[in-house]
Image 1 (cartoon, protein in one colour):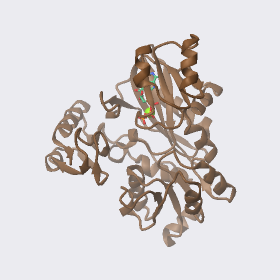
Image 2 (cartoon, protein in one colour):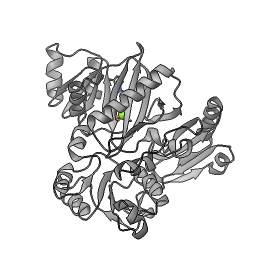
Image 3 (cartoon, rainbow, N blue to C red):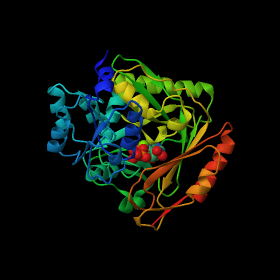
Image 4 (cartoon, rainbow, N blue to C red):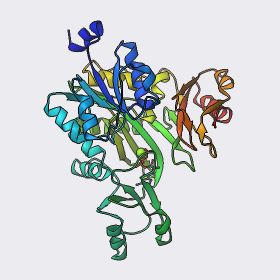
Length: 389
Ligand SMILES: Nc1ncnc2c1ncn2[C@@H]1O[C@H](COP(=O)(O)OP(=O)(O)OP(=O)(O)O)[C@@H](O)[C@H]1O
Ligand SMILES: [Mg+2]
């Protein structure tokens, strides 16, 4: 009997999670099925995951002391956000605590520059790039003709939800769009489709891929708006995308989930954009549409259990439920009952107390045998459900 199997009887097994947002909440829900409490660290007991566990520690996962204190005595540590203090994780690893993903890999992944170097070193297809110490060095390179417009500038460490990403088309845009600090620039990919493949790997080295999902972006917020599974791609592209994602997780040699964001360019090449070593927005649909949700899969992987089937139960469309533009304050929900009348609609509300324009407040997954009908329903949900103040 493994340590985990014993613990399910006496609940002594301690899985610690850095971060207590919506991903942590859904991880805690999956852990609940195994009657495992998760230990969680985040800023406030108001956060989405807090009410699901009696073991919520208020603290800062970016602070060395907080992570170190939290990690002591845990059997396994994992994350729901990569921007955590890895110095403390290295220390905890030295003290014998199992950490998935390993801190050394987290160091690479949380720095978009180091990530790109990793792909280059391992011959993983990715768009051409250059690294800069700061924006001044980039401006110099532009002046010397070492860099040409247009390009995509990315902050090396600060970005999430498109916030550390700037598409700069010409010199006139530099004033308003140039990002400060250490950065990289990438060639603009002629994108046909944005895809994501979530893969999982356990300590035994078994790995498995979910079906590719296709992302459609909100034009203003630069957030994924619709996420469609299966993606409208050929079988060859589907297979190639899954194989590439599996190659990426095996090359990184991490345990747990790895969400691999891919670009399919107009010439048919598949390029790795970036990865996230944790549950991911593009995997929310798996709760309602796959044999094994990404959250249960993450738990299986980090506890070295057999990985679950990634088979699809039904086609699905996922919509992020964003705070309405122009509304800041205590969140109110309109249209919930109308949405729940629609067959196949599953609402997931994160319980964030305050709403802000385009803040991720929840998501809806619509399952339907017919993908076009699922999309129609997803549009209806978007029209009906409003999160206002
Ligand atoms: N080289 C590129 N060429 C064209 N478009 C790009 C390129 N890099 C990024 N983008 C666009 O910008 C989006 C955000 O980029 P990226 O995924 O690197 O940033 P992010 O801040 O991590 O975003 P998110 O958290 O939403 O994944 C991509 O999904 C894509 O639409
Ligand atoms: Mg991204």
